[in-house]
Length: 454
Ligand code: PHE
Picture 1: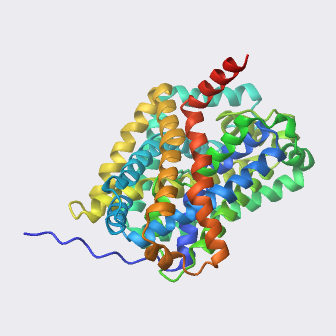
Picture 2: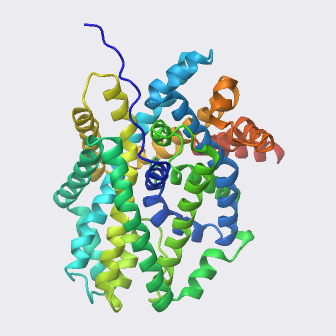
Picture 3: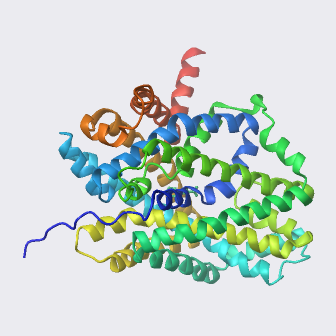
């Protein structure tokens, strides 16, 4: 029996479902935990300015490229890249973008779901009042206890992967779209609730100073690279998540306008998260600690000590879990779409298979910090920037002009020229720098150069 490839599937119910799903992918642990702390570490307002420039000059143009490749290909990232390369007369190896994306998604999901599992664990822990009134040492001990408890971590990690698999198995419109339409409004409401509480009871002024006072002396070259790398991670770029979602986008929706809305929402959530978290940290005379400690030790100390901390704390960990879940489904979708569109596996077995691989990866992360760090570093610092670089180059230099015209036809000639310059030259240069620095090559070059000068 010969196999005929499935016809391109039904799309999102509306453009807004696409926007909510892509925003759900973008808004995740990166916004709520990582952005506030790297901002504080890297010069506050000065860093925010550089980060905004990275979003504008690299993030938005590359996101437009990803959406347009997805919508032009109308398939999963691997097959979209294959057919687009063929119809543009480019080398078939461009489909490596899709393959590396599927791998990166599985790697990120492995460690991401372990952290999400901690967030899930903290919902009943906080809601039951087991941390209420606890002192700093007791809260720190509780987190250390969880990290040493392989069994609890396994249970929560499994629960998180199971939720991700179930949503993905329900398909694009009901599963991903339905989840985004239901959970994103809850996420926004929880975030505003926390912001309101911090405005009323936190040290808001101190937090604003911490986040926005521009101290350019603390802004190093390294900070610029951190900002660019984070722009990629936070917008979910470089691994085909946005490309996979773009394949279901209505044909008449404007790609530029849509990318702009997603980037603005993602950035707004990051800034508001900072303004919700730090006032509580400062009001309780705590230090804005880096790493997982900020979410799982510093904040719980503040929650343990404040009026209504039980509710605010529970709301916070619910927010964190929702943000992680709507990102996790986008990490699995490229691979599941690929396997199921090949017609060999249905969506449920494909989700179970790939979810199972990420589940095993997560178990390795629970038991070994080294595996955790290797997966994080390889996916976040190497595969995402490399994928983004290739996506920008392919869309800018290789894609058949008529396809480009069909997708970006609504852009004015001036904006179209700016976009082309950004994806052809500016974004590849910026991303190239990130890649060189992550591999340590840039450091080597600097040492070599300073050595050569002195
Ligand atoms: N954007 C997500 C976050 O900020 C992480 C992510 C990266 C999700 C890549 C999907 C793809 O947490």
